[in-house]
Each structure stands twice: as structure tokens, then as C-alpha cells.
Image (cartoon, rainbow, N blue to C red; front, top):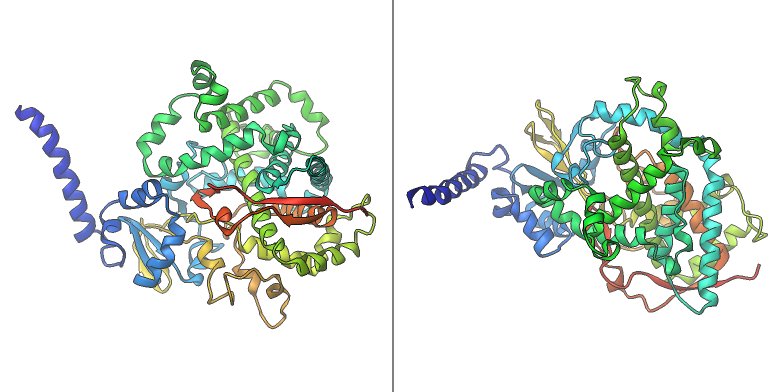
Length: 500
């Protein structure tokens, strides 16, 4: 009986001591914030998992109450002043990534999840040539082909008198593009009925699990300890009943094995894939190629990131465009200057020279639904952020949303106004457009993303007369699940093909 009592008492005593230390002795004790946030990380778990709140939205209220710096965890600070973003994600800041966030996908390797700068740089040096501005000249044909395929599939659905779920449509476009680009092997998501490809559905549904995996490491460790192929094998009717996260990992793993079993097919690809680079020992500083697990991790993260970010930007941009008929007319007139014949599309360079189209894409990127704080760890010597000394070892971060919705930088920040990017009186506005983050760890797929955005926006505006199909502001509300999850109807639109 005494032994049983000790088993209960000792953990409780340790937990109480830990909470008291966090509140009374921790180096961050003087920073303002909710008391429970400073006491325990389960405060954030309560907000994100139980209440299903998006922390970035809640933090607007917390910054109003507590000031520019808010303690949102025992060892985590969030910053609200836009200039702090450049303090944290500066080009010369080679800070480690926070294992709490970047362990969530369950990978130990990969350009996105490497915690140490040196590891990430070695991988980036291998892959960056694929994503350079020059490389996009070779990828442009692939992007245009998929955009044309997107338009064709939308036209068929319109002929069947069906409105389009633009979230799934745009994610099908970006998924096919990133799969072809990274693996050299498209999955033809653009051909799926209603754009409901199994991988699209599985990736979307799996987003709901990510806050749980982020806040409860023991759940994450348990789930990722079971190989996806085993789950898919032992669960009856696994295609429907297996947890979506396992389905995503299993589908991508199969794609990986398909490519690796037929490496000779890589010679047929019209462009480099990640396997051309990662299987080339000379491309690596270590002169050794990654193992199968490392190849899978890199492929998975590139696909997940590449399929969601651009598509979500397209969704937000089109939602606002479809409420502004005059802007749509102006954009089409501008496009006609470089795209008079519908069957003879322009080049990417032609599109990049169009000022209103460029401004529209920038404003759509400003509305990107990204509330995640890309956390970094302050080095042992400490740092100065927002003119405050921050102790070494502190986890710090700032959500992109807090830059893009700052009235200090963007007048009428919650209003969609592409014309703000054309106003010559406003200087240096581009430095505050940070959808791909900044610094040495920023997303290296930025050139591919811009290429997709130019081509896809142009294709939709030039090919279709579009109107909303009952979409409400409530349908556009999203929840932060590291990527955006839309729990309601999604953006639906009628897309009538133009005749010329």
C-alpha cells in the first residue's frame, strides 16, 4: 500500500515542483503572459487540441493585453512587433530549430526538419540547384501542362453543371506539379472525380492530427513507431479505416519505391528530380548518398509543403477576387496584352512583367493562411530581440500572420487591396511580405511557388468567368494545424469557360 502511494505521490510532487520552478525561478519568469502558459506547456495543448483554437489568432488578443512580447510556454516567447521578425529570421542568424515543433512530422532528417543549421545547409546545397530561378525555365513547361490540365478538368465539371471545390482543385494542381517535379512520377490527381484524389483527402484529413502530435510527444512517438505498411496490412479495409496519417505516409512510400525500383526511368525525365541530386554522391559534401529512410523523409516533406502552401494562397486570392468583379475585369484586360490567343499561352517572363497580376499575387500571399510560429532556439550567449535581452536556450518565434496583418506596416491590413503594391509612395513594402519566412532557413521552393502562382492565377482568370457558389465567410475560416485546415464547406465557385 505504501509503495502504491509513493507511485502516485512522487510524480505529483515532481510536477508541482516543476510548475513552481517555471513560475518563480525560470529565466523567463519576468516576461508577461497568462499564468498557466508560464506554468505548463499543457496550456497551449488545451488551447490547440481541446478548444481547437488557432494560437496565432489568440495571440493578437494576448499582445493587446500583455505587450510586444508574450510568454506562451514555460520556455517560449512570441513576438508581436513586425521588426522582431527580422531580428529572429535574419540572414546571419543560424539558430537551431525548436525540436518541439519540427519533430511533429515524425522525421529525423530532411531539409525542413533538420534542427542544426550545418545539417540543413548541406542538404540545401544539394537541392537548391533544382529550385533556382534558372531551373524554373526548364520547369515552366511542366507547370503550364498541369495548369492546362486543371483548366480542362474544371471545364468538364462545369459542362456537367457542377461547381468547383477550388481548395481541392488547386491542391490537385500543386500536388501533381510537386510529385512530377520531385519524383518524376505524377499521380494524376487532376483526373480524380471532383478533384478528390485519395492522397488529397488523406493529406487534408491528417492535418487535424498534427496539433495532437505537436503537443503530446508520447502520442507522436507511439504512432510513428508503427510502420505505415504494417498498419495498412493489419487493419481490415485499411483504405477506408486506417488513420489518414498512415495512409499519407503509405501512399508516398509506395511512390518512392516505384521510383527507386526503376531508376533508369529518371533518364527519361525532362528535368532533374530530387533523386537525380540526392543519389549523386558528388553533390554531397560527405560524398555519400542518403539511405532509404532519409530519401523518404525528404520526399514526404517536400510534397506536403509543396502541395499546400501555393494552393492555400490560390484559395485565399480567388475568394477575394470573386468578390471584386472590377478587379477581375482589369486583370483579364492586362492578361490579354500578353495572352490574346487562348490557345497560345505566354511565357513566365511575360507574366512577371504584368504589374497588376504581380500585385494581386503579392496581396494573395499576404493573406496566406499561416498561423504557425516557426520557432528557433536562442544560442547560449543570448540575443536581443525587440530591444529586449533574451536568455540563451529560449524558444522564440513569430507567426507570419502577425507581420502580414500589422497595421503598423499595412494600412487597412485586413482589407484585400492589390493596389497597395503599386503605390509608389509606399517604400520597401516587399521586405514585409514574408510568406516563405526569411533568413538562412527560409523555404527554398520560393521560385517554384512563384512560377505556379503566376501560371495558375493567369490560367484561371484567362480561361473562366468565375462566380461564388454560396461560399460564406464562415466557410473560409481555417484552423492552424501547422498547415491550414478548413473544417467547413471550402471555397466553391462556378467556372464558365470563356470562348476566346
